[in-house]
Structure formats: C-alpha cells, structure tokens
Length: 240
Image 1: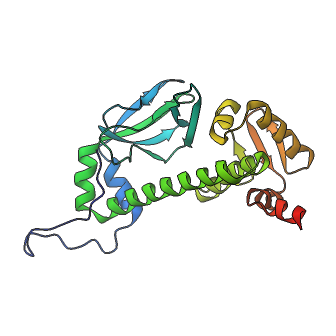
Image 2 (image 1 turned 120 degrees about the horizontal axis):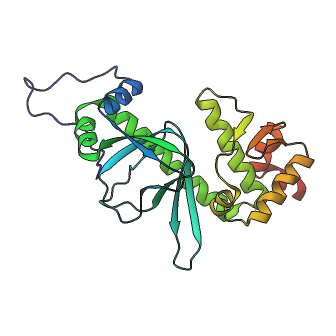
Image 3 (image 1 turned 45 degrees about the vertical axis):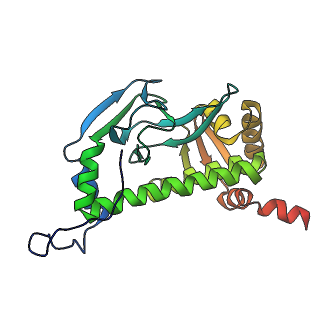
C-alpha cells in the first residue's frame, strides 16, 4: 500500500539537498521511467474490491470506471478515469472498489513499494502524488454534494461541466466532450435512471445548451447556461 509520508534524512552529510525547484512533471517522469504496460480489453478489471494493493497505475489510453456493488444489488459508479489519471492511491492494504476498463485501455504500472520509496526521496514525486490524491478527495466531495442536493438537470449539467473543464486543463477543446462511457454508467454515477439521463440530454438539446454530434459526442453550445444550471443558479432565479 502507498503511504504519502514526508521525506526524512539521517544526517547532514549523507542527506541530499532538497529539490527546491522540482517540478511535478519531473516527478511524473521519474515515477514512470521503469513502468510496465498493462493491456486491457473492454470489461476487463484492473483490480476488484478486496484485492491487495500491489501497484500504482496511470491510464495511458482508454477510460476506466471505478464502481462498487451495493448489498441490495445496485451499482454505484464512483467515477471515471482518463488518460493521465492515476489509479490505486488508496491508503488501505486492499482496494476499496472495482476498476474496470470500459473499452480497450492501456495502463502504465509501477509496484506500490517502488512508488513509496521514490516518493520518500523525491519531492517532485511526492508533490505529484499528493496533487492526485487531493483531486480524488475533491471529486468525491463534489459527487456527494451532487447526489445529496442537486436535481437531475443539475446533476447532468455538473457532469458535463466537469468533463469540459478537464478538457481545458489538458489542452483539449472544452466545448467538445467525448462520452466514452455508456449512459448506464452515467446513470449509475449520478444516481439517475437511464431514461432520465436520455430525457435530460434531449431537454438540453432543445434548449440549445448542447448538440449531440454523434452518439457519444457532445458539443457545448451555451457553456454559461450549463454552468449556471450546474451551480443551481437557475433554480434560485425561478424561486425569486
């Protein structure tokens, strides 16, 4: 398992000088220099809940769904991971959820023990892993808020806005969203039915918020209205 602990040194003579100017990209390069490649087919699991946490993964291509099976038989999709995202940052000895490839996917893999040693000795690696873990926590909190307080339209708007912002952060067109996951996954992620997801997308099209370019491709036409809806502002205006 991977513990993100601060680096320590034994004495002033043997300790390496701190990497004051270490950049996150330097940490990524060091971490994945000796990685191996895991090739997955559609539906194949990276790991399942309860499996020992032996490796840290980075998505090289494809999309991974994270999900848990509830005791009543329902499925909760926790999130989706895309190229550049890390998998396996849990701090427990076993994985807490399932990670499954939606389509064909390639992952880079490094042993968790090796990642731990490198993080303890390189601030760039430490910073990169800490940033990834912080993003996971923020995403989990946002999902909890979405499921707890948002109506179906707001939930789907939040989902689309989040994908749009992710595109922008990675240098891609924020107005063009590739929905690599099926609508059943979106429904299980947002706590909705498939019918509600489809009906809400159709409503967004009629209101010219989005355009369905292809079956799994969305073009955002009105990002301001979509963002306002995602934040509950349009509901507030109606109440006023």
